[in-house]
Image (cartoon, rainbow, N blue to C red):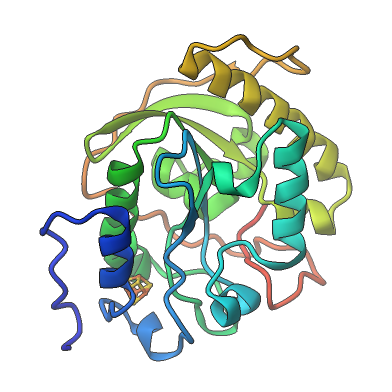
Length: 244
Ligand code: SF4
């Protein structure tokens, strides 16, 4: 198939979308990937995570958020009474950038329709972005995750109005221990937000999430520019960058 000729207009269910995306050649990342890491989880998830891009382990295994960061995510989910299979994990781009660099703006733009269609199929109540790249794409704001984490926004992705809450990427908490407590607090605020959106009783709050200005995002989403110097020295090549 020639580059960029995949039809994204035809209706698909989530499995159909995944199968369609598995042959995607819309950007140069197709040339170096082992496989497309489309996403995984419940097709009716109320909570959808959006990470940055597959890393080394994800590219090898085809599973989003593998390895230590994935284990930490599962622990954070367990703390709020959820399992990995209760949520859906997607990413801004579905193929591993070489040497696990940040995805480039044209790669993000090329992959954006897959993410939008994922969200339109799943129709979650809450989207939690993990790290800078996903947060900047879905908020349209250049704010760093250090400023935007935990701040709830109203956004619209395609045809889906949804609450968005940016979070530090779990990998960031693996490298910077102080972030783990922040991430744990943000997860408990996330649980309260999810309960509110579902019309269920809220768990005892540990923190009250701040509320940001509403954001309306229509296709195409603005691709956020890459951010230099995201990860701290010593961050492993195999993990995602743009975490801070
Ligand atoms: Fe296609 Fe996205 Fe992979 Fe690029 S990163 S080849 S747009 S699936």
